Image (tube, rainbow, N blue to C red; front, top):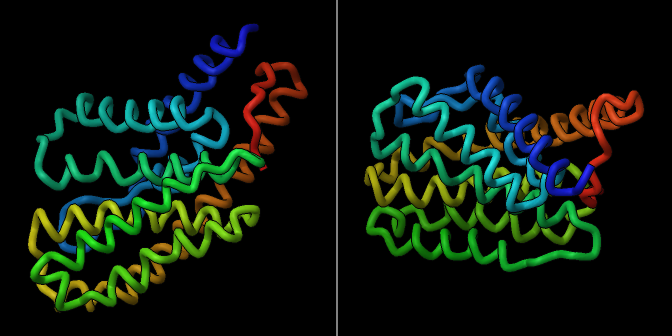
Length: 222
C-alpha cells in the first residue's frame, strides 16, 4: 500500500476515534459554557503518528464535523476553541520527529505573551503569561521526554486560547488571578493525559500492525 493511501487510512481512523473522544466531556472552561473533553488528551498526539499536515487536518475535521452534526451555534467561544489544539498538534508532531526539529513553533507562545501583556487588562496580570507560556519554550529543551513534550503542547494550546480569550471577552484581572491554581492542576492533568494517550495509541497500533490488521505507517516518532 502506498504511503499516501496509508496516511489517508490512518487519517480516517484517527478522525473517527477523535470524534468519539470529543463526545466525552470531563471539565468546564472557567468563564464559559465550553467543556474540555477526552479529545484534548487525544488530539495533540495525532501529528506524531500522521505527521503535522495530516494530524492538523484530522483534528480540525473532527472539530468542524462535530459543530455540523450538533448544529452548534458559531459563538465567539466556539470559534476560538477550534484553533488552540491545532497548535498543540503541531508542537507535539514537531518534537516527535527525531533530528528534524523546527523551533519556529516557539514563536507562538512568545507572540501570545506579548499580545496578552499589551492588552489593558493583561498588563495588570503580566505575570500570568510569563508563568505559564514560557513552559513550552523550556520544555522544548527536554523534547525527548514524553511528559515534557506533552506539557509543551498543552501550554502552547493554552497560550493561544488564553490570548484569544482576553481579547474577545476582557476577563478582569481577578479572574486571571483565580485561574492560576486551576491552570496548574488542569494542565498537569492534560499533559499526563496526552502522554498516556500517546503510549496507549502507540502500543495499540503496534499490536494491530503485528496482527496485520493495519499496515505499518512509517512516521518517525520517539
